[in-house]
Amino acid sequence: MKRKSPKQYTERFKKEAINLILEQGYTVQQAANALGITTKLLYAWRKRHEAENKPNALTPFERQELLALRKEVKQLKMEKEILKKASVDSICQCNTPFNYLFRCFELQCLSRSVV
Image 1 (cartoon, helix red, strand yellow):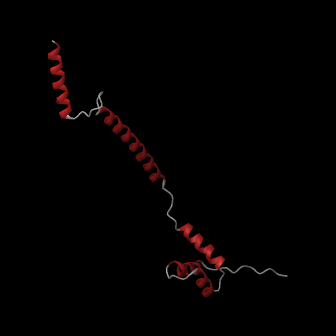
Image 2 (cartoon, rainbow, N blue to C red):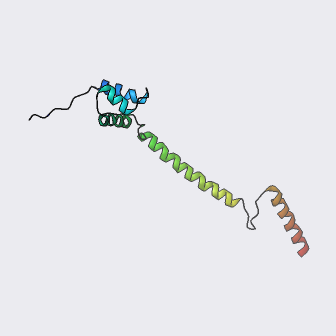
């Protein structure tokens, strides 16, 4: 008994079959029936089409740029934390101009009263 060889379909036929589903709104079942193929075959073509047309992973340049940007963000966050800690004095008051002048005035008053 001779085995039946699978039918070969052209790439154009496959693209048109996928087009029925993706762009013309046919269900896989409807498209398969209209074209005389199995739904399993059409699902496989659609899966391959989606894999081929999936946005590629990052290019080497994009990956390098992403790593550099992440490093820069980390550095900026660290600098921000340092500045944030430096802006609060030892008695946990923000170093605003008003607070600075007020503390200077307080220190002058205290130093005069001690003498």
